[in-house]
Amino acid sequence: MSGMRFVLTCVPGVDSQWFFTLWNDLFAVTKADEITSDVSIQVSSTSHVPGAIPVPASARLIAETPTRSLWSGNDKFWMQGNGIKCAASKSNIDIAISKEFWANTLFKQRDFLLVTMVSMLRLNDVYGFHGNGLVRDNTGIIITGNSGAGKTTLTHALLSDGWQYLSDDAIALEIDGPVVRTRALRRGFALTEQALQRGGINPIWDKNSVRELGNGKYLSGPSVATERQFIGQCVPAAIFFTSVGTADATVITQIKPVEALFLALEQAAGLFVDAKSASSQLNLLKTLVEQCACYRIVAGRDVIASKETIARVSEMILSAAKKNKSVSSVDNGALK
Image (cartoon, rainbow, N blue to C red; front, side):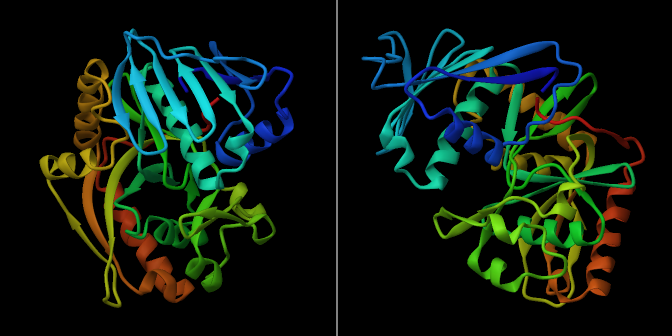
């Protein structure tokens, strides 16, 4: 991310292979090209580090659930819960793991590590966003919407018609000169049992790697064919706010940037976690919706009906994105 590479290290007391496997299963990390700085993730074991990673009294509690607490202060975040403690700064994450962490569902493990990484990235002016990134014909798009809005189903349809993809359900955004750049963040696909059973045309997932994620979903790595469609980053030309309809045909309606901004705010990760970066994140989202052609898309039955109907939906989306003549820039390089 902006020449950033994650360097994972483990001290004795942690099964490093478990952690490395988990990290590589969850996040889009590729070979280190054009690295300008490293971000160290130091993993230790609480059983070997008494009182590991204490939260200073000066830190401010900014979020708390029955299982997790988050503090901030002096350009640093602390998080504790579910058998894990961490402190994230601009260039380093210290993580202390106990055996309790490995007893959690995969959903909780992924959620904790994702929030930890996103907390550190925001200190580098890189912000998480709830959405999918796709590319076709050198034209990038973002598909976003609430959970259950059909983002993965629509992404599956577009991938079966030849699109490339960045991430499922979580991407990263950063200002790159005058534009906002979208980067791959999460690896694999979160699927409902219904989606797994339906399969569809050219399944995007590897059926041999499916694992129960928790919260009624399953996690799978990409299929061999899908893996070849991975692209690390793009400058999006359009953003689609999706929902699931009951009609046969998909409907796309253009909206104004001001409406799109309010919708984008709902999908922004940790927007008001700390006042210092909130202004930068708001400016990024404003730049994003001004840069993109903005649409509401109500997905119909045609996104799962047949190759022919999917191709028509795909062409509709691509044509809508290409109306934005000012943005058409794609390069390949993931979160490093």
